[in-house]
Every structure is written in structure tokens, then in C-alpha cells.
Amino acid sequence: MKLTKVREKLTNLGLEALLITSPYNRRYLSEFTGTAGVLLVSMSDAYVIVDGRYTDQARTQAKEFAVVEHNKNLLEVLASLLETLNIRKLGYEADHTSVTQLNTYQKTLHTELVGTSNIVESLRIIKSEEELVLMRKAAGIAEEAFEYVLGMIKPGITERDISAELIYQMQKLGASGSSNDPIVASGVRSALPHGRATDKVIEHGDIITMDYGAVYNGYLSDMTRTIAVGEPSAELKKIYKIVLETLEYTKEQARPGLSVKDYDQLARDYIEKYGYGKYFIHGIGHGLGLELHEAPTVAGNECFEENMVFTVEPGIYISGLGGVRIEDDIIIKKDGIENLTPSSKQLMIL
Image (cartoon, rainbow, N blue to C red; front, side, top):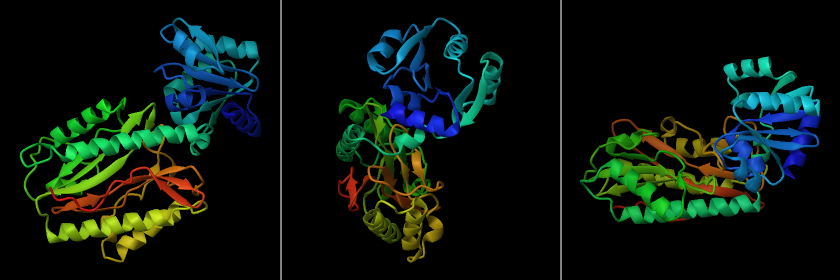
């Protein structure tokens, strides 16, 4: 089915084949999980070209693809294959090709090269039930790790301690790794939306933002929770309440047919009515799947469709005071949403 859809797109573009070099797109189409290799999809054939390290693995995983092994020069093997197949017009993934790579293609591949964009990514935007099962598992792992880490957070430990424990617990629970370098930002550093963990010591009265996720069989989760160690200031409590209200309100509005840009505006309008609009300095969320940030995006022209997965992450950040972000992962359903990260988001004061 995936290859059929790719071929339909190639027909519409007047192309005879597509060279796939993105590791995420390669995995999505072929299920091959190796760290090197390319795919070639023509109107009648599909190949995965790998070196000898991955030949057996590719044969086991990429069941719809013929496996072609190269010893040293992948492009020479690809050029020979294109000649055998009489490919005169080849699409390549422009978003994943450097100028240097393109120059090499032009010197080596004796065919017309046409840059393409989002051929495979546009298929990845709607998740299959098999993909959703993996994403539910990734989200569950992240939530369980959060519950564990709550028990070790106290004054005297560092942000790095929390980050390391989150990663360790997720791996113990079955994750292959962390979906990002965890954001752990405490005290005034919580005003940094992407404040990576440092050696800063957690102090009484600190508010702590933790943004992280798990990788499970290639699929990711991405959640953010903000907690307090000791009683936070009245202003931070007020901000937390507004962010939580915005999160819950915005999730309720998600539905098929709503544009992602309009969805983002709903969150901005909600925060603005409390006078904090200028402190919400990023988008309301992003698509999630094999990559941490994928379509649909606030910057794109997409509308929500059933079985898209999207993060909802309003935040308010005030320099010198601190910040709050709370984030859930949701599946867009026919009549609403499924929340993959349903754990309590009421302010926890440890």
C-alpha cells in the first residue's frame, strides 16, 4: 500500500523512480532499521541498497524490497541499476540532499535528476493502527518514568541528575532511548523553553520544567510536565493555572478539518485574554511520529485529519522569574481526541 501511494505520486510528477535517502523515510517504507543505505522505488520494482554489514538484516526486514549489496561505492551500484532499469527521470529528496551530494549525483548518475519534497513525509502524517500502538507504548513509558522520577526530586540534586534518571528509567521500561536530550530547567532557568539540563542545584521554591520522551521501536513520545519543589511564588502559580487551562481548552477544540494555524491561534487568544500573550513564544505544537518534529506544523498549511498525532504544549516564559509549559500528545479522532499522556497535570508541590 505504501509503495502504491509513492508510485501514484511519481506518476503525478512525471517521474520514473524515486531515490530515498532520509533514514526516517527509508525505515517507514521498507521497515529496514539499519543506519546506512538507500531505497530506489520505480514504477515496477523496489530496491534497498546496502553494504555487507546490513545485507542479511535488510533481507529479513525489507520484505517488499529486493536487496542489492554494494562493496565500496554505493553510487556506482545505483548508477548501474538505473541503467538496467532504463530510468531516464529520477526524483531525489531535495530536503535531505546537500549541495555536495547533488553535485556527486550529477557526475555519477546518468539520468535527469528532479528535486522532490514531502513525497514520503505526506504519507507519514496519518498513522496506521500499528504505528499508534507503538506510540501509545512510547507515551506510557515516558509517563511511568515521570512517576518514578517524582520520588527522587528534592533540594540538593541537580538538573543533570533528573535528566539522567529519566533516560535510565525509560530504558529500563523498554525504550531504546530518549526522543530528545531532556529539557530540565529549574528556577529562573525555567523561562528558557529549551533549557537543557545543567549542573544547577535544585533549591527550595524552584519550579522545574521537564520536557522529554521515549523511543519505542522507532516511534516517539514527547511530554512536558512542570512541578514545584516547595511553595512557588503567587505569580508562578497564576501562570501555571493559565497554561493548564489553555492546554485543556485547546485539546477540546482539536478536530478533523481544523487548520493547524487556526488551532495555534486559539491557544494564543486564550493566553492573551489574561495579558500574557507576548510570553507565549513558540507554536502550540507539532506532528510526532518517527521524528520529534514532523508534519503537521503550525508553519504549514495542513488541517487536522483523523489519526494524525500532534503535541499540545502551551507555555508562558518570563525572564528573571521562570516559566511553565505543559504538554500532551494527542491523536486526532473522528469525534475528538485520544490523549496519549493522560496523567494528572495539576500543579505538584513536592
